[in-house]
Image 1: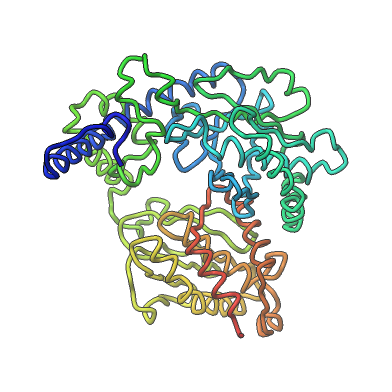
Image 2: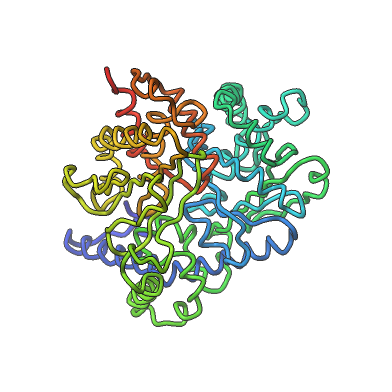
Amino acid sequence: MPDEATAQLIFASDQANHNFARVLGGLRRSHLSVTHRLRSIRRDAAFVTDVAAHYPGFLVVANERCGSWYIQPSLKSGSAYFKSTDGHTGQWKFSLRRLNLHLLSLMRESEAGGCIVVDSTRRGKRMPDALSKTIPLWCCVLNRARFPNDTDVHALYTPPSVVSASEHSQMLARVPDFVENLLGLGVLTDVDSEGGGHRPLRPAWVTPDMPWPDVDGLRDRFDVILCCTSSRVPDADRHADNAGDYIQGAADDSENWASGLTPELFWGHHEQLLDSPEADVVALIRAISAACIASTNPTASVDSPSRPTWTSTAITPCLAAGQWMGTSPSVPAAASANVCQIIFVRQTTDAATWVRTPACMVVGLGKQDKIAGRTLRYALPQICNFVAAFLQKSALSTPMVRVLCPTGRDISIGAALALLCFCFDANGEPPTADVLRSPAVFNKDVIRVQLARIMAAMPHANPSRATLQSVNSFLMDYRK
């Protein structure tokens, strides 16, 4: 559709109109070049650095997927996952998949009693829904669930310049149901007993075009979540130098423009990247990315005994999930004969070849995570029965099941969820042989509670909808 500046232009022929539209498209693509994105990111990151300096002692947390781009590595203390879609008008939600309970523990490490959650937005908005609505709902729900008798901290706080009074009241009406759902998971007692934050939460907001809040009066009673929008609305900055090159929310959808560049690589080479001619930037990014891979995996083998080949996080004493590292799809060696490993690789392999040893499977579901997530449902029966047989044989010792995938955040998490429901009891312990042979019954509540347990242990995990749908499909249809 033409914009206001071109809507009144009239051309003598359709061909001329077509050519003009093509030129406009080229100009828009040029404006969205990688160089312009990286310069915009650096500019927005400078604002985040100023905010961190203005609130000393506040830990700086990236709201992923794009928050890490705007935080220099020396400032970053962690990550969170608050989705804007959970704050969209009429779709307000307290996510039981993304509990972000690790922020409560992080808050106790803060010298100032608070953290700065960094995100950005695009399309002319002042702040993303994740900061204006998702986090406020999260704070309100947690306060009511953790401090049920302290009604003074039960209010919902939203930025009045962004959220209307009508929307605020509609959000507040849903809070009791959200609280009930959270309490039904039974995870808050464990979080608080393990040193979670001990004070109520209070959100506040800072953007490049609004006064910075005074939080000193809040910190006497609350842990403050300072929601920092790093990007600015271009119209509000139209007089600044090079404002025409600025891209609001430049780091969004980095998989479509970054060519393998990550926030860590960007900040490690940002001066070189931004000093290079625009025509050379993409090639330079690919060279930097390739050099990083080569330096990380010089032997190109995950079987090398001279270096760790995997990293994992314990979900229960007997179940862990994580990432295997290397460029070869061969199998990391098990630490002992009493360790069962399920390894997912980025290949499509015949199910008949998956079992390598009585304690190891190598499962190939495909290169793309979305495809692998959908295909997982067909692999789970074989995987779960394999692990169940291993646990029966290890009944007299202390077994460990380790599930690994190339990212450590998606497929391995889905498989671990299925195993936690299928092969372990409600406490995460291997059941007796009699229980293993008894018919299993699964429902959404059981699956939801076990997913919450995983997400509390692994806040960086981010299982896709396709992966979770595969797990639900397998468990809900089991033995029906």
